[in-house]
Image (cartoon, rainbow, N blue to C red):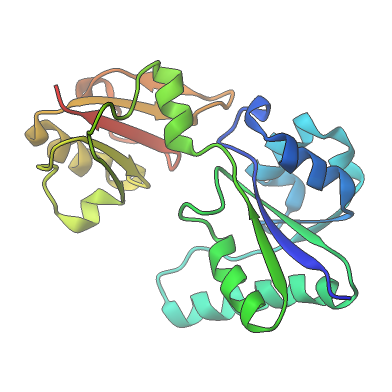
Length: 227
């Protein structure tokens, strides 16, 4: 029988946010795939090993897919990553691919999942706490209430869009152009807060646009709400 490829979310940073199901799957399976060149250096591993110490003794499989804007190179890397996992599935072994946050939200496993399924293997997604839910909890605020809509936007600076719709905005992956993002936020008139590296030792909380540094990192999560 063929193995199953699991895309397992480990949450945004705090190991206490890992689900019981994620912990069980790590304990029950020997092959753990991680998104990086050196598995033990990946953020997903460093989170999960705090909750599941025996992870250190598992077979750790690196699935390295460096970021690139070249679509052909992207596809080649995704194919290589999928084949690495499929080699174990063919042997009847399950593979647990650990990913930050939730595997259904802007996750690299999604690209592998499509290929693996097209090649005739079974996959399963295991939800984890999303970064924006964890950030809202850290800020001690609801993201939306009553009938308010929520807009989740990656790299808002690339869209050149105004945040002019009612409700709350969640901005992800905007750290590289934070200076431009702050201008968009100022013109929106919304109440802005940001958490960087939520749940990690390097966590920082910002309560207003003026507090946010221009050199914010990749794991900068912004919540902009109507006043």
